[in-house]
Image 1 (cartoon, rainbow, N blue to C red):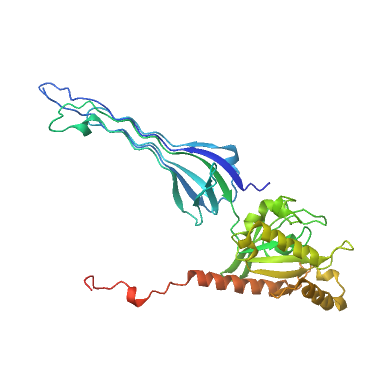
Image 2 (spheres, one colour):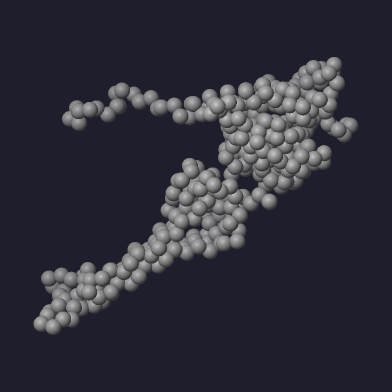
Length: 358
């Protein structure tokens, strides 16, 4: 199924009901007075993060969403009923922006998180609200307030700990299939990956991380060339990037160093924050390099690439070197998770005292 990560919807909260002008008419009640009730509030529109959803495909076929309007006020001091709220279920990680201005309004980051994205209008006042000592028979009422109406853009960014990036046919799909439960399409031609693939890598009991494989990038991706530019945004929330490089390209005359530098240049053009993320070098397809030539080829690549970070030599096809890579990634991701969940240290001078008078 084609991965749908964007959708446009129109939402409308319910209008508030109008207030009512009414007077009490009963036998032997000569001066019954006003008894017109208020209108009911219009329904709200809520968005909730549903962990069971992973695409926005439903909103491509259902664009208009309206909450119920509030009922009008009635006589006999009866207020109008509130309009029915509606709840829109969206995948975790959905970003909700104003389609007209591009302003980011909300983000659903936690499973079960619920946000009001359109507020229903308040109900109008009935004439009983205007009764006073000098206005015994008010005939004023107010109409209900309109509910909020918005044109929204929904965008889903893949929530993954680790992102794989590289040229087409670098072996990203083979690697994610080797180390995780994902089963992407694998073939000996470029652009076999047409949508992001997510896989869970299990390191041990209660030890796992999520890895995302996105379509291969080519030079000019930041300007829209190829397929990968559509999915660069999915790498923005990852904690670590693994730059997969084909160390033994099939075509003669292809320089892996030039390809690797081209990918880095595209990252920098697209998003500086993405470019500055931790990025490890993974040299793949060592099984296609003679054993006696491997060390020299890796040394030559690192020297010409001028890379000083972690370097991993693997063969995703035979799984050679994959286990050390997985363990190193887990240690890095786990250390970041621990740091993010660490309690904030509070200066004792500003700590709350048990004695409210101190």
